[in-house]
Image 1 (cartoon, rainbow, N blue to C red):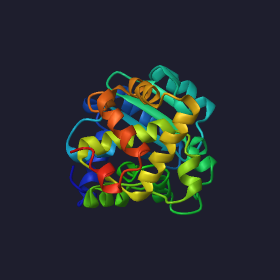
Image 2 (image 1 turned 90 degrees about the vertical axis):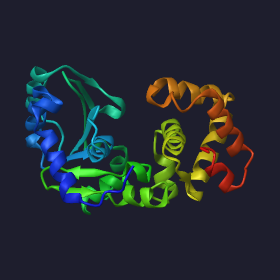
Image 3 (image 1 turned 180 degrees about the vertical axis):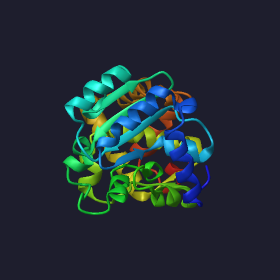
Image 4 (image 1 turned 180 degrees about the horizontal axis):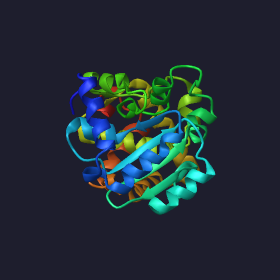
Length: 259
């Protein structure tokens, strides 16, 4: 994965994608057009990396600056079926691609006042992502791309938690998903772990042990829930991570488990 150097080219490519029915389907384009009621439409996460790397996104994740009006929801029902997704948003399973929607008020970081809505929201929403690798946001209406956290990750080859604050790290509700994602990204991209992330993972594995006793079984249940991790996070690999973190090995040894 390369850093993002030409933001203008990437922004144009993302805008083209969101308007192209041959790539994301006519129903997805219709849904995105319907979202025009929102003052801003923030595309977050993997789709931006996919466009940057030249691959086709499997899904689109949007955060809306405004709540979804009831009349627009009725119109959206005509575009495609939807259901509640995790954390209370909406998931549309469309003909070509899946689209997940959350309003800013539903975002956990906003609820916990981690996101400061009076500041520049594109950067603040990026801060709401847990890991620096995932700190990518594109404001579709304003044509603003935030990629500084992602670039820092690529430049340093080091995974880190974006905000070094206890409230930010430990109020995030996705503890199991955060740990598994860190393991997966480290394994896939040969990233090391920052000291702060190493401490977080160690504490979470200790908590999993206290709460559930069988830490490995719990991690494996998470891999089953997120099957995209299954190819790299095998039972043996997870056992190695558990052993490394629970025995308090030196930071360098923990970080180099991908070798």
